[in-house]
View 1 (cartoon, rainbow, N blue to C red):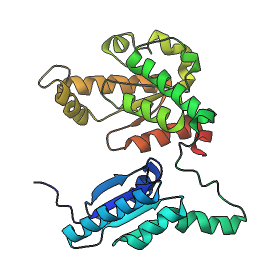
View 2: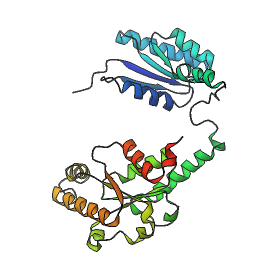
View 3: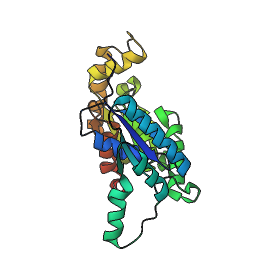
View 4: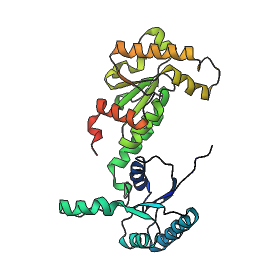
Length: 276
């Protein structure tokens, strides 16, 4: 049965729209309804603002109710067109939060357009790209080179969430995250893979309930030995036993989001990265 969208929400920005959408989604998550999302990025001229007004108002006429518009617009003239022209509920993030902070702090904000302005001069952005490249090169045990430069090395059975977590840590926090699968040969040796033994302090383990693991693997290889519940139970039990023996910190990804997993890892491995 298709989801019935009861209202349209617009995210309007003179940058990518990611900040507006992230902020808006955090607010909307408090309400149990499924809006239609429309991101309108790079609205940086009055002409583009008028185009937005037409689109928003057309949606209002079609749906018979006011859309909701989240904005992170820096240009005052562009914002004025949106606020005065849209037949919608307009929520301006800068007006609500940034301007009161300017008054409180006694200083002007930089009014940057999004997080990505002037990236060529940003060391943090450069470090993030380097971290993404590192994580891709060290995904699923592809390479053992340069592991001494890793911020964290994730281990766990296949399909326990190592790859998406590694990439999230790299993209969001600029951490060089390698990940390494635990395989039957490791369980037979009852030891960590040889390439990882020198980096035990950097290792963090991920595990998962066998039933959920079987579901995930069946999506990839239906009715295979790899996806069987028996095999999943054996691998998970062996992996958890190994992590206990080796004194490795670990958590279950079964009911956790990537964001929750990453935050837990950061608290254990690099807590200073939780500070922006």
